Every structure is written in C-alpha cells, then in structure tokens.
Image (cartoon, rainbow, N blue to C red; front, top):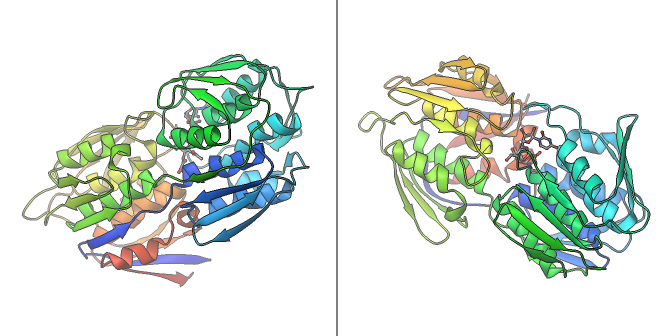
Length: 424
Ligand code: EPU
C-alpha cells in the first residue's frame, strides 16, 4: 500500500487545472445503461471510482474504451441485472445502476451498500421513489431485489431531505416510465443539471433543471448521445482552501466558479482575496504572520449551501485561524473522522454531536505527523494540514484520495508543494 509524504511549509503558487467532476461522471456513466449504441463522454476524470463503475457496467454486459479523458461506452450489450456486494461495497454510488436497470430491463438486484465512514447512508428514499412508480422492492440476503412487469408508471415522489443520488436514480427511471413523474424537494446540485442535460440529449423530456421540482414526461425509448462532464467543484474548492492555508497566490483554471457560491464567500471572510473570471479563480492569501486567517463559521447544507464535501478541508484551514470557529455538519452524522488525525498534528478541536469547535492556533503552526486517511474528503483535509504544517507528514491509506482526486501529487507539485508517494 502507498502513503503520501508531504514536506510542509511551501506557499502554493502558479496554476492548477481542474478535472471533470467525479460526482457527475458516476451518474452520467450509469445513464449510458439507458440506451443501446455508443455514448461519448468528454472530460471524464481518471479515478478509482470511475473505474469501479465501469467495471460494474462491464459485469452487466456493456463495453467501453477510454482515449485520454474521452470515454466511449456501448450500451447495446446490457443483459445482466445484478450488481454484486464486492463492487457496491467499495463504492456506494454503484446504487446508481438501479434506476437505469429498472427502466431498461424491468428488474435489478443490487447489493445494499451498508454503512460507510461518514454515516449510515440508507437508500430508503431511492426505494420509496421507485415504489411510487409501481416497482416492487424487497430486501433479501443483503440485496435489493426490484422488479416491475412492463413499464414503470409516472408518479409523484417527495424527498424528506433532498438526496443527490436519489434524485439522479429517479430521474433515470422516470425518463423511460409511462406518463409524468414529479420529484418534489429534489436535490439541486450542479451534477444533477449535468445529468439532466445528458438525458435530454438522449431524448428525455425533463422540466425544472436547477430547481427543487423536476417534471419528467416519460418517453418510450432513448438514444445514445454525446455529453461533457462539468468541472469538479469539490476539487476546485479543495485547491482554493489549500492555497489559503499555505499563504499562497495561485490561479485555479478550467473550473466553474458559479458552482462554488458559498465556499468563495467563506474564503473571502477569512481575509483572502478571491478574483473570479469566467472559468478561473485567483486566490491571493498572503503570509498569515502578516495577515492572519480570520475565523469563519460554516454550516453544511444541500446546494447552494456550503457543501459537506468541503467541510473537512475548511476545518483544516480553521485550525490556523486567529480565533474560534464553529463548524456544523448537518448532512452526515459521522463526518468528523479527520478531527482525531488533525489533533495529532496539534489542532485544537472539540466535538459536541454534529458541531465542531475549532480554536485556531494563530501564530503557531501545525506540526507534521503520521496520520491515517479514513475517507476521501477527510484525506484531503489532512493533505491541506500537511502542506501548511512544519515538518514531514505521512498520510497512510491514500487509496481514499485516489477515489476522487485526479493526479493530486502532480497537481500539487506543479503548485510548488513538496509531496510524493512512498510504499508503506
Ligand atoms: N438519505 C437518507 N435516505 C436516502 C438517501 C439519503 O436518509 O435514501 C440522507 C443521507 O443519509 C444524508 C442526506 O440524506 O443525510 C443526503 O444524502 P444524499 O443522498 O444527498 O447523498 P448521496 O447521494 O449518497 C452524494 C455524493 C456525496 C455527497 C452527498 C451530499 C455522489 C456519488 N455522492 O451522496 O459525495 O457527500 O451527495 O452532497 O454524488 C464524496 O464525493 O466524497 C461524497 C461522499
């Protein structure tokens, strides 16, 4: 197994280009199950998670090839309807095949993902939604067995909490249902808009993009199409925070600043300067001895609120502020696994339920230590802490990072960081 080693203390400078979004690529790849023919996807990041979902599609009978960041998936060979525990347990987004399998084959057997490092993460909303469209869903031997005779029938689905993959699964199922489906309190993340654009290019009839009420008029069949994955807002946000934490001055290119409304505002409140261009963000942080990082409170919320996927990274930044900040995680019940690791580096953080109180170290520095990555975003917060810390930080289990950050070592090196991989 490999670990990441960082020699901290370099201010990040220069330019970094953002890859396609993991959380858009996964549903768009799953959507290629919906129609035979060759689907072409551009700007697909080369990540462990994208490979996992492609392996899953292969196990269902599809074929694919990659040429740089362009992926061609042939949806013609779909013939199996089972997603095994081995594939789903490594990536819960595998449940995204449920909707397309039901739409195209009328049946699906998909392993329940089980809990994960950030919370229980049930899929009851997805199943309740399918039931509204007439699907029978049973749970047997750890699998969801879902089936319907004939086509699904349009219905009304209301989510108690806006669920990102739940909305995506229902969109894909309803696109081929008979009649009209309405999703109320739908999630509004930009990745959902990207999926809607792909479905519409395939021939789907969907109204309400970017709103919390989606209306899907089912069509009889869809055809393969060409789509482009949007830039990864979480990757862009992670680099923006890293530039601030190291007192750097850098330009983040090939990104979509309008997808980061809450983060950019929070960063401005820390005292850094943020200049936004059409597809670029320039971050100028300045040396924190001359210009302290101001403490800022954060509450995670569904989009356009502050993203839970950038909570751990912002907490790493707040450990270096000159005051007290309060971080409230409202989306996942167990997303503070990075706290114990940040404490090993000298951070002063207290947790009370879903609230973390972070007392900044002001003039003092975090100190490098051996730490352990526990999930994807927790890992990137340790990278940020390591980049700003005094001395060497060794982060074990970096396979978590490789699930969601394309070429992180190369990109950080390009920004002047001293970072490399070693065998553990
Ligand atoms: N929820 C339920 N029942 C459900 C579905 C969700 O109770 O059936 C709850 C969840 O437990 C959570 C809330 O609803 O409290 C929202 O969860 P959501 O369903 O939106 O999360 P998700 O679709 O499983 C996606 C991203 C996550 C991201 C969350 C929140 C993908 C593939 N994953 O997960 O990304 O944190 O939305 O924005 O899109 C990551 O990239 O590191 C990551 C974890």
